[in-house]
Image 1: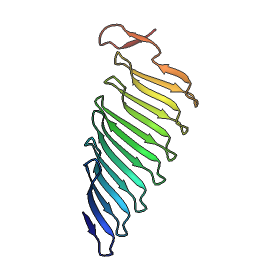
Image 2 (image 1 turned 180 degrees about the horizontal axis):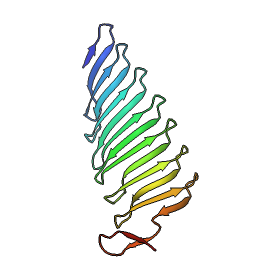
Image 3 (image 1 turned 90 degrees about the vertical axis):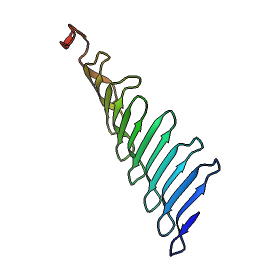
Image 4 (image 1 turned 45 degrees about the vertical axis):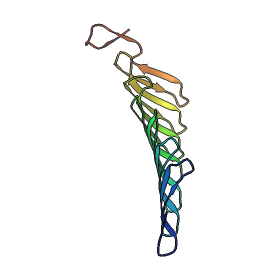
Length: 168
């Protein structure tokens, strides 16, 4: 089904895809598609938003058994921000104008605590913050090529429950 505007261009249309799912699309007055909502053959949903030139600027989708994702693009088409949700929790990824990640944070894989990594302009990790298996904070600093310079605390063990770490 199509909705035609006064200029004779398709302003919106709805259709059934080959696999049986649906698509709903909105267009500018001259027919450029700028928004779509659709389902894949597994029944997962996806939303895409584009600018007036048709460049993809935002996309959000769900994936069975994996969770949801959201990505925002810069005007040059590079991914600037991405978020994901899974059974483990959330992840945030921020990138520079060239698409290299500069900040990645979220839940450490297979754990319930958080982790945060900062990257240089080349996408190399230079600072990592998180927690140890024991629950204490840990900070690592790397050089511009990603080689570890120092980690705080270096090694520790708990002297008594609730008293905190001690250096060895």
